[in-house]
Every structure is written in structure tokens, then in C-alpha cells.
Length: 159
Image (cartoon, rainbow, N blue to C red; front, side):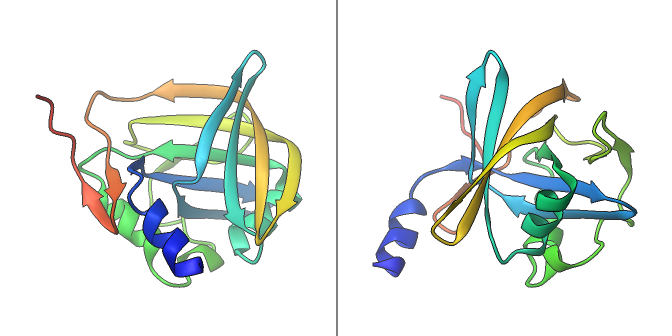
């Protein structure tokens, strides 16, 4: 069932984000495409992260995260966070970032970002579902989004 589910979900096209956080002096990021808008009033989003992932542990402790939405010219940036073990380290120091209201890092040059404070955490299956209140948001530039579908990156084609 696990392989069938993975294959079926791979047919669902998603945007590509890097989830970032700061816990004390440690900054961290990981790729994630399991997110959605929950509510406009109050402004809420959710993100799902494997409970064993280091980023999940840091978000549980810091209670903040930011979603950095990538453009179609940022595949190399996404690849940095897709490498095995990439989410286990203090892995943002080589990137240009700014600090959001919550203290979470915002990666410079992304299409947009959402800065969030965790309001609730649900443990389901092997993942944590973090509900975040959006306390800051911005759209930094106009470009097409980076898309992930069927195991690879894609670009939009407008017809």
C-alpha cells in the first residue's frame, strides 16, 4: 500500500517550498510540499512533516516556521534541501536570508513567504501536522512557480 500511495500522490502536482525555522541560535530548512491554506480569518496554514525529521523537532521546540515558496528558476536551491540528511543540520548559513517577525529565516529571492507561529500540533501516522497562524507574508517577485510532479520538477505552460 505504501508504494501505491506514494505513486498515486506523486501524480498530484504541487508547488515547492522550503520550510525554515530558528530555534535559539540554530537555523534550519527542509523541502516540503505537504501544506495547505486552512483559513483566511484567522489566517492559518498547515504543514505536514515526518515526526522523525530534525526540522519537525526544531519547530516543536521553537513554535515558529516560515514557508518560502520557490520560483521556477530556483531548482538548485530546492536541490540543496532535497539531499539525504539535508534537514538534519544547521543548514541555512550559506544562504542570504532575512529575519521574519517570528525570527524564522526568510530566504532572499523566493517568490513569496509566509511567516507563522504554531497554534496547534497534531500527531497523525508518522507525521506532525503543524497549524500555523500567519503573522507575516510577502510576495517578493513575479515569476512562475517551481512545480513538482511525478518525481521531478516541472514548469507551467500557459495556453
